[in-house]
Length: 154
Image 1 (cartoon, rainbow, N blue to C red):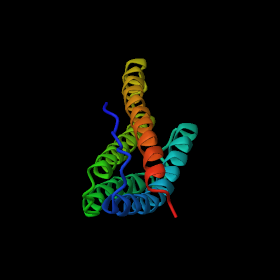
Image 2 (tube, rainbow, N blue to C red):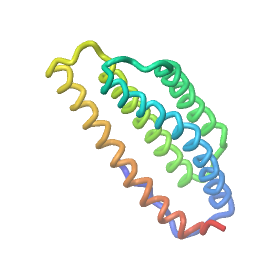
Image 3 (cartoon, rainbow, N blue to C red):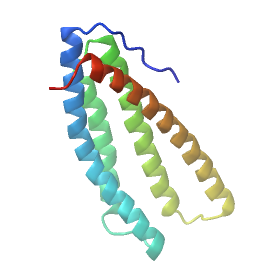
Image 4 (cartoon, helix red, strand yellow):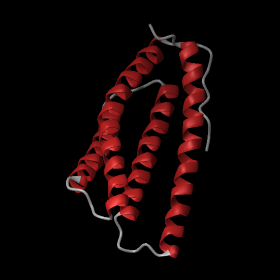
């Protein structure tokens, strides 16, 4: 994965785009965060009781719909600064992989098939997703640290 190059020269457009992206993210994290936590709790419950909790499927549908909204709303932000655009693209990937990981976990926990082969395949997939997420988090973290210096938040 490529890291995002951040130049030292601030631009007015960049400052506005960065602020917009940060505000957008706060809203998305609230939306997806609460649902994600709810789903994780229900998955934990499913593991304990070996039954699928009521409302889990609805929450998953809602979560998938929210993920799609996140992507659409990111496109509608109309970010023009190339650096902020690159950061936004990484964030979109991050949301997508995180969502994929959560949904994959749900599928495995609620599957009839609990064979060692099935679990092994799942662990491999989760491992790969986890690596992608960690890489993205590293790139995003570095870019944001550089952008926070370049565009200090008021």
